Image (cartoon, rainbow, N blue to C red):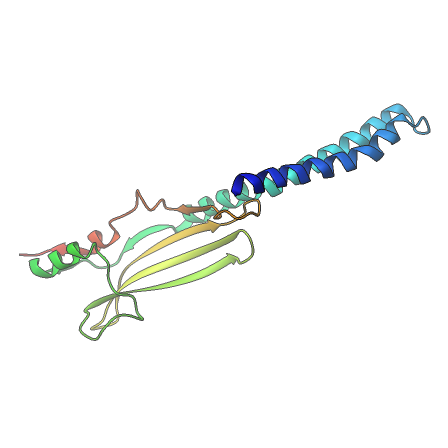
Length: 187
């Protein structure tokens, strides 16, 4: 299905290009304006059409990925404010649960630690650019033990029936283990 949609997009782009070329070709053939002026007008119109096509087709993603990298370099990544030494059995429970702590909505009163997150949208329309802060919080005193700041872009692709692309910084595959920096296995 997505191949047919891409073919449709290419046909529409080619058709619009052909429709734009017809008056330009007639203008070139007409001897009313000087040849250099005619060639300049056609070159400018073609450059504008190609530039707009490139921007919509991929340039927006490149621009916003660079913006995500710039913002990420400012304050992205993990910050640990306090480390906690857990008893061996509690530490092993966390390891067994793949370091998944309950979030603020699902945390029960018996949970000593939970995760809170906030998302701020720098750009809410397509493509979206957002900053997400994930905080590990101790229930007893409400202290933030550490936070992880991530920036991301979602969307910006050519419209179609396929799933949109995304980009995250820091890369989630290389930045895992945030909780292991906060919680240390005790005796």
